[in-house]
Amino acid sequence: MEKIRKIRTGKVVSDKMDKTVVVLVQTLRRHPAYKKVVRQSAKFKVHDEKNTCRVGDTVKIAETRPLSKDKRWRVVEILRSKEVIDMGPIQEEELKSGEQGQ
Image 1 (cartoon, rainbow, N blue to C red):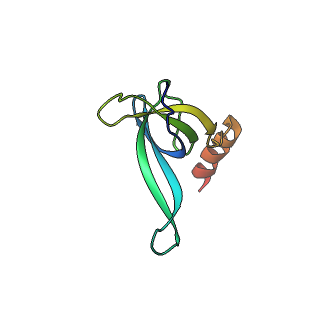
Image 2: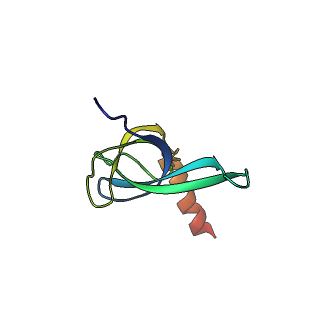
Image 3: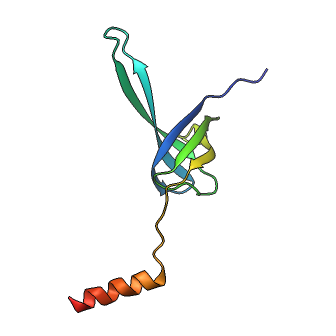
């Protein structure tokens, strides 16, 4: 019988390590005494084999065997990539010429 692994969805907050990203997972829970909805957050170090995740991406992560001292999760898929605005060569030239004119 295979154990069912935990799956979480979160946002990448750091990608500075090699093959590792830090993912922030936020959950809403009701406080047991006060009955108010409280936001809880946790950061997980997650294995990213191909270094494809970037800061701001929303990813799905799954629990796995210990991969290092802190890593026990791996990236399953990137749900939404943060948009990167690509400045074409024309816009870059306009910016450079605008700086020289001032």
